[in-house]
Length: 570
Ligand SMILES: Nc1ncnc2c1ncn2[C@@H]1O[C@H](COP(=O)(O)OP(=O)(O)OP(=O)(O)O)[C@@H](O)[C@H]1O
Image 1 (spheres, rainbow, N blue to C red):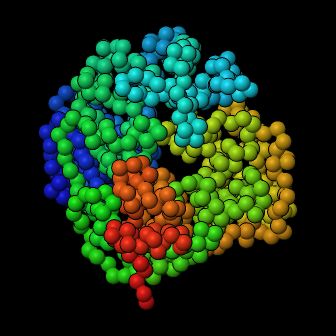
Image 2 (tube, rainbow, N blue to C red; image 1 turned 45 degrees about the horizontal axis):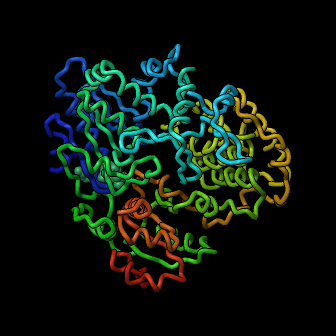
């Protein structure tokens, strides 16, 4: 890690007061946060006080830990103690929920996390919302804070339905008396513990006089309540983030908390990631006027809007891949981005014409691992197969929870089993080189049954009843699994925008529908617009926005206006 810019240095050297660091995309938040952490730690007055640097994903936490260790080494100091780098949920769970919340829960012992599949939870339900519907399980209850009041709600794939407050609260509290909490309800109990116990607030603020939060635009409403309570008790809370990248609105995170933070604002306004052609698009969409650091690069690097056929995305992906190579960029550090995970799966080649259900997903996983060397994607596909087909009545969102270790630490043992399965062609998911309808499927049945038995042992989640039907050879051809995918699509990583957040990539192909394009061009005032902004700010040197060919002529002028011109003619 090298030097700091003037703006970054101002953040690092600022007094030990609460700061709101409002940063644009690619402005070096990581570097700034790590230097600030060290500076704060050195200047800490309370001899026993600690500094916390909190973020949201395990990837971010790993980066911070490594960079902090490297910085200490570079400055020839042995890593200073009394620093905690963790995810915000892990931090409040370890420091508030586990040791203290049992009192406000009126539980006989320390609070414990339930995954949702525990048999005793069957006794914790609300009456069915309508005739014939199943009762509402406590495991499906979400919580948010609206106008300083807790609201309990259900989430149906992004659609929120508020529950009757009194009955939902009574159910949550009945579960609390046992000492149990779900991941969602953990934040509720943290807030309650802090609000009710002044001594806890004071002790906590004494232990953590300084708290820095990275990606602060993602702080959800319940986490906001926790941070507000801590800051009232005396912890100095510094927020670092980009309000234009708030893309977790469903959790009450839309960047407003960061923008409205009553702390001294410090800007980070220079984009160090992208060439000027790309930063120009980011600035046009966000209305910001920040600076840039990178020099321009000759075409075909740059930012362009290109036509695509929504029935043949493989063609535009193949064309893009050629452009990546023509620019001298690394395809392994490039990606195709889109909004919906369903489209991402289709683009990655697991088309419905190959096999069905779990078999289709697992075939795609084998090819992702053995063809593209993408074990991470193989893991994700296995998680989807588990949720969609292989388990009996899995908790809603299980695949997403398995893929999000930072937020769902309770699933760690299951995640380990799934990783082992996805990674190893010897003990787990059979090799994509095997013939699909004979050797591969036969071996698959054995190893899947083994994985499911392990999962049941660890979590109580049961295998689906008709597993052999779900793993039928039906519609698998007499050819190696690896030949089942369109080669052009598999040659590049395909990812959702949410999945690529926080990353720097060499080149990005962002595939949009008309609705996504409208939202992107309208700017960062809506979450859909911000998702577009996150996508276009990932690449360093090459950005293509792929627009359905039918509508491209109508949008050409608007696209030109934000810096997304047509491809240069050769
Ligand atoms: N002062 C600097 N001089 C040169 N390069 C820098 C400087 N600060 C950061 N960078 C580089 O800028 C790039 C972007 O940094 P980083 O990933 O931390 O951005 P970010 O602010 O987190 O962006 P985003 O929010 O868009 O993910 C990195 O490659 C980093 O090394």
